[in-house]
Image (cartoon, rainbow, N blue to C red; front, side, top):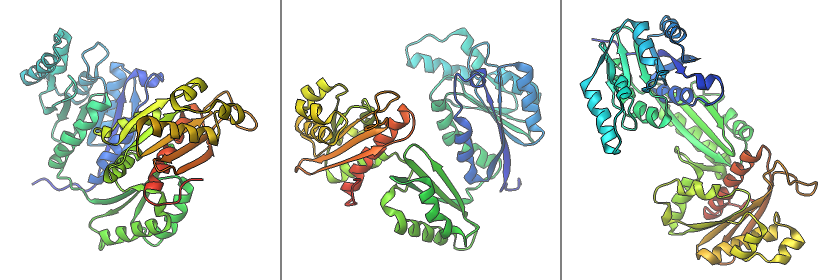
Length: 424
């Protein structure tokens, strides 16, 4: 009987010359490392290799000298530079053979989309004679498992929308069976907005100093802080210890926590609106529809999102939202009175429960000493006439200012709905 593995190091090789020349950014290392960590799989090295046969083959051979498990991403397409399967075949001395089952899957993929299958797609039906293939439900390239009994190399397609569900739905179950892996980590997460990474750290640090068995991970996104606390399940009172620290964090800075599960702030706000059977409308200027896009990314958002107006110019603010010309003349578009009138205009137009307005200077030009780049006014308005305007001067480039503005706007709605003090 195979011994259960509790700690299995692995490596990752990212294939693609387009990554090395900066045409595309990698996101697989972060995803794979986090997906496998709860099962005792620890990534010890990551390599990016261009589409060159000898160099890629050599990289695979070198990696297999250190680890028994290797993931190779990219290069499984039907074109001349898709050489990953051949490189692994050479490195492991495992021949490839065309699989009738994969041919049928690829044919069905094209037939379902009413497109002809090209002859070069047959290359994607080559599978190892020792190992297996992994069904790709979102593309034509199957994943490949090369397994010589000692070493396992798993080749995964490059597009994230193909790789990520393949890993979660098929690769992890395979690895758990192949290496008798168990999820040995108990983890809890908290997601914050409206506060900084250092502020969260100052609260968490003294709470865990007497618990060295707890691992702490803090990740900062644009306006969002992600805290993960983990502990080995086998330790005495693991769940109770973790819950105690989580409760302590909530007691200290609970008002900044918008979720305890992996979801966006827009999704959380949508949940709160659904629970109250309420709706929100938008009046966006400097964010140019970004906030509406975030809200509508969730299926079923029409139940709580009434609609939005992108009033980028002063004329559109006047004509579409009813902003008074004298308001713009006296205070300017980036001002509290303008934000309030934009929000009221959205309420009037969409007859929603709530309205959020955004107006600001995202840059890189347009700033002044009085209103520097990054100045934004946000206003939350309720159908009962209550308004909650506030101003922020945000750091960063144009894109990060727009992203942070959306976070602050959504957080204002979250705070008011939950009975917390609004941003001022």
